[in-house]
Image 1 (cartoon, rainbow, N blue to C red):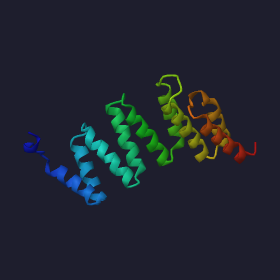
Image 2 (image 1 turned 180 degrees about the horizontal axis):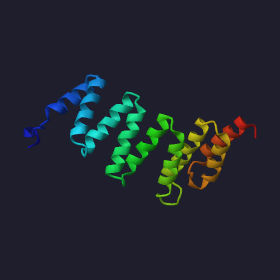
Image 3 (image 1 turned 30 degrees about the vertical axis):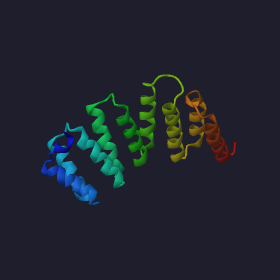
Image 4 (image 1 turned 45 degrees about the vertical axis):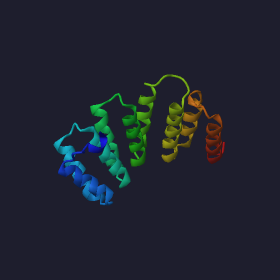
Length: 165
């Protein structure tokens, strides 16, 4: 039954995927952006465009795609995580910290891998801004969210060493 199934692709889809497979990312990006313009509610096109942006190291485009996805489906956690990563890669650390804090408040208040990684990402934002005292405060106050205390303590020790404390 599946042997007789056919997949029907539009000419635009063929151009988009041929561009990706041929490593012609610029052409693929144009095609995806055109498809996104004609059908702004098509989540798959936006998701694929976000992946293409990150492959091209266009982090602003990656972040904006995830921002668009959040506007369409705000309850999807993977869109929020992508938005956080995009703001971090883009170098917008203040916005990344704000998003992390807002998102963490929506999670269950018990230690988990996700809450731990959010603490670590928030601390990394402070380190990237060269605000080591805030990174230390972030790690110390986030210890209730951390499952791997050895890694957290190692990060704290490095930060204390860098600050001379």
